[in-house]
Length: 260
Image 1 (cartoon, helix red, strand yellow):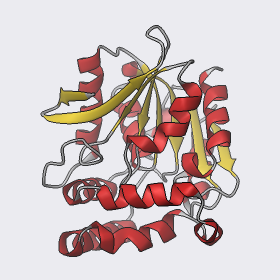
Image 2 (tube, helix red, strand yellow):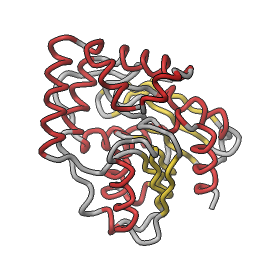
Image 3 (spheres, helix red, strand yellow):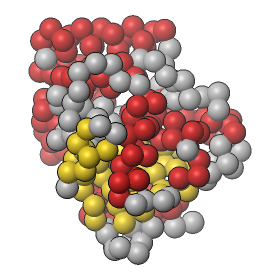
Image 4 (tube, helix red, strand yellow):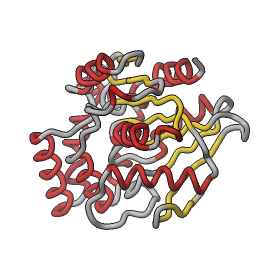
């Protein structure tokens, strides 16, 4: 379903019973709402779910220019307002995790339980430089030039070698990501820091990360330590797109936490 919000048209899918609690699912960079297909299938009888393509991704419009997380968060609030969603649970991976951090800090009254996955909560001078390098590659040679390096960052060598079916699904998501959207969202990822205010969050938070997701697993453990009462789960063997690497474990953790 296409929805006009915050000046652009978003691609969304809504599923689940009308009276069930809302759960919003937010995709990572260079993917789309279909990264959540397994979770939607498994949870469709328990929650009213909104999966959406973030700005510049999937079938959502991809304006040119650099985006910010302030803009990506405003997109979500506008979508919620357009759909009459007063409050919702949240689950986001990577870019969707950072979007969730911004939302719970700046719009706390609109959210209940937060599931925040596979993101360290901030950029650094080093990662800013890496994002600028990726932006330059996308501008010059498009998404095919970023495919293999992205897959190698996201997944451990043993997963790439085994090449389970979701590898090709993700490759196609990366290749079909609009260049404008990749550039815009990469700029946001290269310039954000939600860490200072996360310890003040009063909402129930579940941090979740793939065991093989680089430095993110350790960074998220630090964030759990900094936020009293929050929970943390590491998904064995999973890389950066942890909900697709370990879908059954991810969904069980999500269900257990949201039903708590």
